[in-house]
Image 1: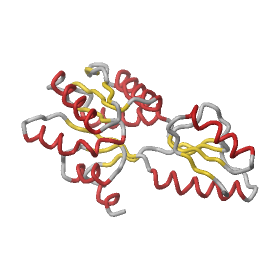
Image 2: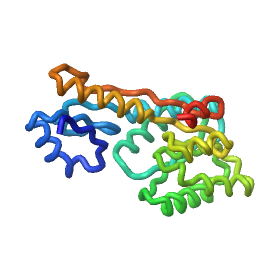
Image 3: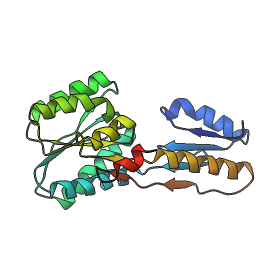
Image 4: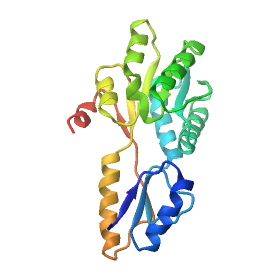
Length: 223
């Protein structure tokens, strides 16, 4: 093994393996969310607080700082940081906007759909909903049916799977806050190569969100 690029799910469970790899001089780079243990060689991904603020800035533009905004996501520390940045930004920039408490789901498509349904029943006049984890693509048909029944709430997605991008193109989603995972993985491999050849790499590298809407979605679908 010449190097490992790890997208973590459980830092506590994975830490012994990270430490074992590093102790054997196998370069270890973590993506997406950084480990609290910092035993890895490097991290490339996103500052989730900043990512949430970038989403907030786009929402402020989309809504003109008017109406009400809420968020739904899977449970996770990185998602809590993301939502905190989102709500913090909007509360400071859009003081008259109504910020609805966020809701969480367990990660399954069925539960996410049920939580989304309940959230919209509780907040039928919501101006914009940010579905701020990568599972929005599983909710396309659900949201399309809501639109057909007269729901006017703007649906802002997260990430760039094909189903989500197609929903943006079709006007079902107003847009998506994209994480450029291709660049993330590509640069991570370059960093592993450099480490394997005795070169230094940055300890931490943050990427910026890509704001995808109908004007630019085709260039990402084409990939």
